[in-house]
Image (cartoon, rainbow, N blue to C red; front, side, top):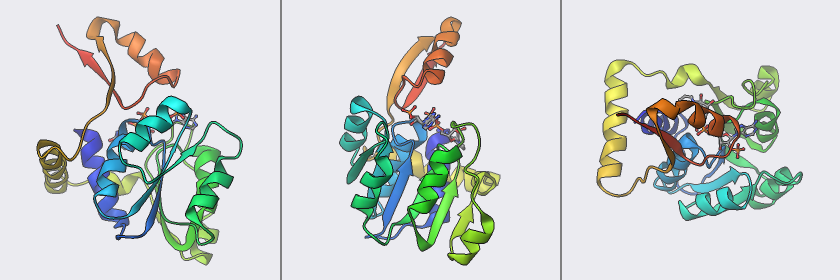
Length: 201
Ligand SMILES: NC(=O)c1ccc[n+]([C@@H]2O[C@H](COP(=O)([O-])OP(=O)(O)OC[C@H]3O[C@@H](n4cnc5c(N)ncnc54)[C@H](OP(=O)(O)O)[C@@H]3O)[C@@H](O)[C@H]2O)c1
């Protein structure tokens, strides 16, 4: 529920238009798997960055138009190739750190860079002066803390997409509540795709 709500807010803030390129980092995770599907529905071209064979296969299955494997040292080259010389119109950064900073360099001048995640250890340390020089709009985590009415509106929109069969939640694993530590270990070990569910008694 929370991922769908956040994804709706991110898409409202960055407003990808049909034909624009949207680079999604952390595409195999909880947020990423929802963002791929909802961004694709806008008519924008989805370029998804995920790590390794299993995760890149998943994001392709979810409808990403282009898939870049972050496992290799050349992922930026791959991304540059599929984005073309202009770069991405929108970056949705769910990873942060130097990984997110690298994606900032893949953004077109005048584009929108939205950072919502920091599993890399911190948000991408983007230079605000450079962003201003390049005409880039910077959006952060505070822009996806909607007021109650907007939260309900975004949640309702995400649920409607799921109910209509157009948005498929990806459940990568389920653990009994009393073994929640295993779920945390799997998240930390970067072994999961999508969301992990804890099953109550
Ligand atoms: N869920 C929400 O509604 C929401 C709202 C606001 C903010 N956020 C934030 O957004 C971020 C993503 O959330 P999520 O629910 O999608 O988390 P998640 O399911 O754990 O996904 C994290 C993604 O980041 C990648 N990743 C993890 N560590 C990385 C690293 N060190 N370097 C590069 N990639 C890394 C993972 O893939 P690999 O490990 O394979 O690279 C995975 O695709 C989190 O920081 C979360 O706090 C989430």
